[in-house]
Image 1 (tube, one colour):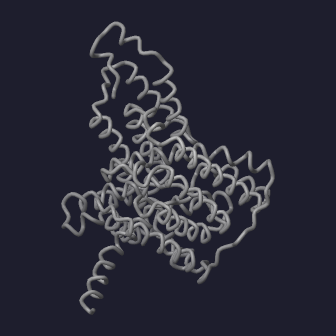
Image 2 (tube, rainbow, N blue to C red):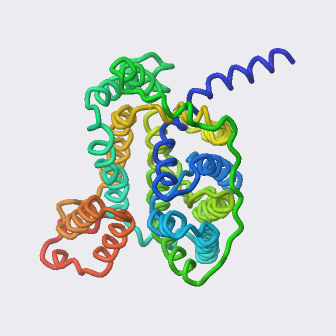
Image 3 (cartoon, rainbow, N blue to C red):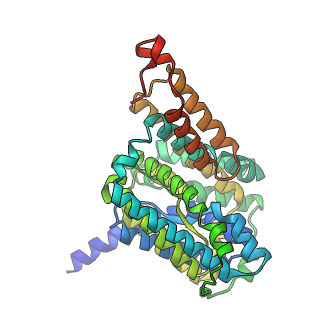
Length: 404
């Protein structure tokens, strides 16, 4: 009995730093949305943790990903929460979003995801995966790392060194090591602001809000779900590449959508934003190579505790932006590299001009469009691939072959 207890304690102690690493990865983006929109940060953290646990329950723990605040809904949330001070309408809009998720989930179940999957060729999948990382490059470099480049470089170099030259234990948590060393360096340089600690509440409870439905808010927010569904699909392509297991087959994309929808509804009722799968945490998986859903679930529990204990959450908020900027360069870059790997492994023929055009359009729209660029780039790539004829197949043999 004692031996079994000791083994369980040992597993817990080994998993804890991995979960903390995921918390650091999601924290900045998750709490940024409430700061922009006027929602409560503590409620948002608790909602993200609870939403992640619900997602894992519905997907039977087969999709190792974290759910955090979606940026796609910043504009309507800012309007209804920050400007009009109508949080009840915002809750209603997010519940409408959850309904769209549920409806699409039923459609995927009825028609079968493989029929849908066939219309998305590798020449579209690879670039879409890449732009998920590349679209975050400006955030990582211009908005975060550039605040103090020396701090960002120290954090990045330490994380890379730990990943490549560290011990076996260090290679599992290179990002956490980079954050700790970068934080200490920033503190020595005088860049850590501890003033938020004194202002934070010791105990914070979520703000339960009942929905107030209007056709205006439903039509304003429900259609955006189609954008985030496409982004979710892109994230699942990334995850499949990372863990070498197709999660769109098992547990299935329908379960993934249903889990995301229910998580969004619960988050709304707790006073949080819409939930979405997080590219930041997919980057952690790619670097650490630790794919256990228990680790993600541990991060979700930590997020809930951080939301309840305001002082602890405030301490994490003292991490300088530049530290997370250095780490994000590695995180987002790994996701972009996964897309390139997919194109290579699927033997996509980039000597074919139509394929090259599809990739070009996806890259430029995805990186250049400031909001919802991933979804728009995916749609544009699919439209070009399926609607534009490939005239090269009429004049040249092997060079005009499709990328399949």
